[in-house]
Length: 292
Ligand SMILES: [Zn+2]
Ligand SMILES: [Zn+2]
Image (cartoon, rainbow, N blue to C red):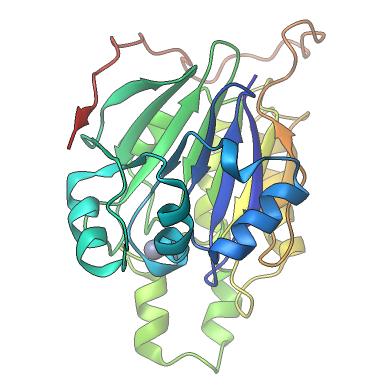
């Protein structure tokens, strides 16, 4: 069973742990190395037991801790070729990590996990979202993203749990006086971030009776409120027939609870609901990672 713990999420830093117990991945490393270690330990993970670091894109709030954290541990750094190029140039990596470069859109085995990436629109060189699964559970990860494409919807379909961005409330962003107009335009643009309403729209497509958790991430401090975001998503879940799903908001400064991605296989079946759309996709053969 895959479990995940958000160590922190927001524009000041994003980092989460995804683990089966046998394989443990860090998803982004946007906190300081010290905070990554402290928060991993707080959540019951051993920072020395990490198997790899999976990167969504090169922005600082997702990679800030790489230089120091990675230098001490030399665990594989998994990202696309373009993201690797930028990180090599800009991330201040003191020691070359063992890179594992993936093709955007590929699916590969990593320990007892399967990892599939998919492209997302955001103002980075090659930003991706992920579907991470084992034999029992499927976690969809989406952050940061300007708008939801058909491909994103398709890839996240059938996820048992979702970790997705709900960056801003449209009304609060419009009313915000701290940010210049150009910054607000960038946030709301098609290569910026996802609003609560956009996240809710996506969730209404992805809702199904066995959806277990929706963890919302990257909430803006000034332009969003956890309660507002939660309510927005809760409505979409209920409308979509996912009455058992729980909604959480990841915090910046605190570790979130560790969540099991799927209901235990022997848990009672939820009440039958008419299927809204086909869930399963045929599984492609694993693609071997190119090692560079
Ligand atoms: Zn970003
Ligand atoms: Zn970000």
